[in-house]
Image 1 (cartoon, rainbow, N blue to C red):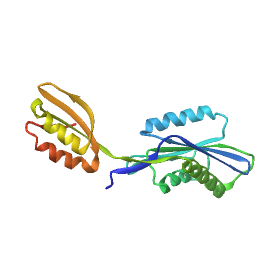
Image 2: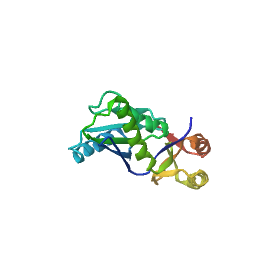
Image 3: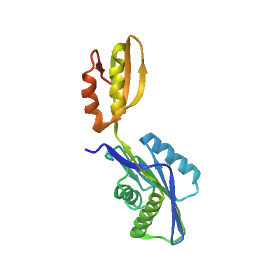
Image 4: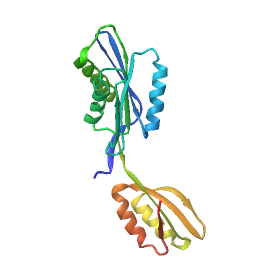
Length: 199
């Protein structure tokens, strides 16, 4: 199990023309299905005069959540080839939409598949691909006098401090990449008075 995945940094675009049909492709980084829905809705509003707005997305470090939509094109000719491009580029947390303006000449099943695939590939070729880590959070409490011990571990493993609350009992939530979580836990377990809090 790897604790990294690849996605895109910001929105990117691509465009192809096939037998006078125009295909505009947009790739967006996304975190949730709700975000996908609002981007698809926006896109439909913006390109209200287009014949089809087809799309596919993949979400989750292992691409656990995915969906493809043909938006009225023959089944499997639009959403599937778009999703295929996301998979072959090994990306996740991404939505790719392809807007089609019909040019009056039918492309046939194989022509449609090729055009949607090429448009999606174009948008992804123009994207900046970044690597992100799969992060986990760890919450715990400890007594104030153990602060230096806790801070020493933080300095060594460099987790991100999400929340901290200093009182007689200090509360803290740290975030660290999955691969280092066990190591962080082991080191913190040795700190006197420290107790882990279930999320």
